[in-house]
Image (cartoon, rainbow, N blue to C red; front, side):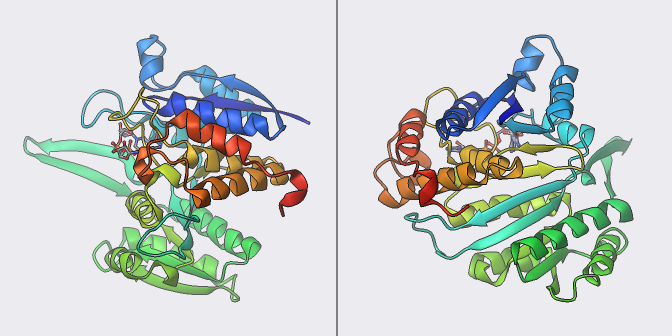
Length: 340
Ligand code: NAI
């Protein structure tokens, strides 16, 4: 079967890591026609706006995209293309599996959790205005509908993947109405899953516990801003941004991308670690039903990391993006060697 998938190479290290992920997917033998579209800085430079309609149309048609990171200027210029994309396609689920990888020495060696972040509202609704000079108001939007659907997705995920506990993360002691509504919505959904343990933890406690003992968590469910911060914290627990994948999922389409950004400090130097985006591509392969290919890619990455000979700078090595891409391709096991 041939799959048509939208490819957004993005900015900064985006084109380097997407090229690597595409090469690795193609090396599995899965047949893909890539529809490549610019978005972000490169689209602006080409005079096409930040998020060209053709790119959105392509994702709507194909229902699946692989996306490199896109730069957002801080406090000026255009607003976040990433947030815009998630809103335009109603990609309400941000799913970020965080797992210790073999051969990478970190403080904890048995991390295995999944962060679910509500992707469309909260403070990221982007409703900010100046009340009077020197005073700015930012609105945190929480709705029962959005809170309920992300909670439902997280509990369904826990059910289907055999995970046993969902921790709902909040700060309802201070944001009584907004986080209170998120919490109430999650409680109502949780009632349908009596076989899954549920706990409610304030975000500050979660931050501390994650650093002390991340193994006490299984599925973490939270609103947008907390999820953004916790995802990066979790990436730090397992070796950094270069290795943590992610997916943005809606009712109609899904966009797969790494947790990391466009890394302008190393862009264009061939140094970026393509592992995070390649693992995101593996999630994508599973999503489109190519489970064996997904398992082969993951096994190849495990092998290369365990061996420890070819590593990019972020993991203490000296290899370049293309070196590790080649090593992963060479390490791909045969289909019969993996359990899909
Ligand atoms: P960043 O994730 O781009 O970089 C943070 C640090 O991690 C840098 O030192 C960078 O070199 C390193 N790093 C990140 N990914 C790496 C990789 N694959 N291999 C090796 N090292 C890696 O975060 P930062 O600097 O806060 O953001 C840069 C830009 O990216 C901003 O414009 C931001 O808005 C954007 N961004 C985009 C995202 C997306 O498109 N989904 C997500 C996060 C940030």
